[in-house]
Image: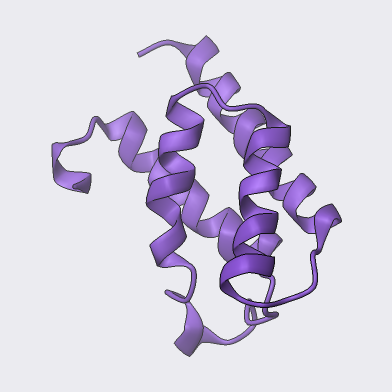
Length: 99
């Protein structure tokens, strides 16, 4: 998938991966190098949300649903909100920068 994307979209995928791992991190594994790919399966859907113009609230809600519904963890709204805000800010900044 990544090879057929523009350099800008490839960078967005890397940013999403970093933010999910280091900011959202619902299971607390950001300090474990062996778990670096733990959230990789969630990058694509978040990418799709960002590319479709999703709001902070929509992305945060998506991340909270993953935590609670798929992982069975208590919601960490503040982490989901922070991750969503970083991601939409980055997306919007890149859009303003042009191609």
